[in-house]
Length: 190
Image (cartoon, rainbow, N blue to C red):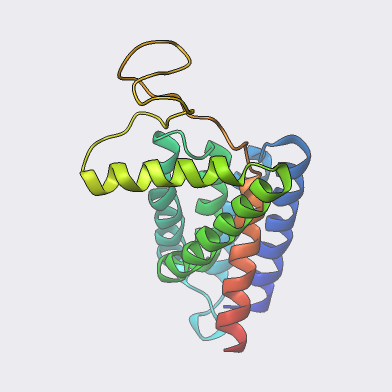
């Protein structure tokens, strides 16, 4: 990957992370022009200099979008996070986007663990994780997580429903920035 592309991507990721920390939003005015910039850079850069071409950049954009869109549809992640990963894919290309996403997911897990420790909600995080894993192992579709008390009791009082006790929201733009930077560092200097 060309240094110019990496520089622009890092600036955009830092701006998105900062915005997400401050307002819990990643603005479209950042991600849409950023994705176009990634595609334009790859259209202009020769392949010998690290250019992917427009199709390679577009494939990366689509990969970033496709990999996180299901998490948005399940209301696990915000739309801004999905668009930020798609923008990142426009700079990285499809294959590197998959590698970067693995680092992003690890960074997100560490961020969630750190936030739960900081807020004194590690027990809630552990309980929610156990219920999700048990539900996945049982092959059932879970609509929520238990708050506590007896199974079948919920905050709303309807038997058979579960209500999740939230550990809190995370500025996932920080995880996307940190994970992508870690991936770039590993691939550049490994």
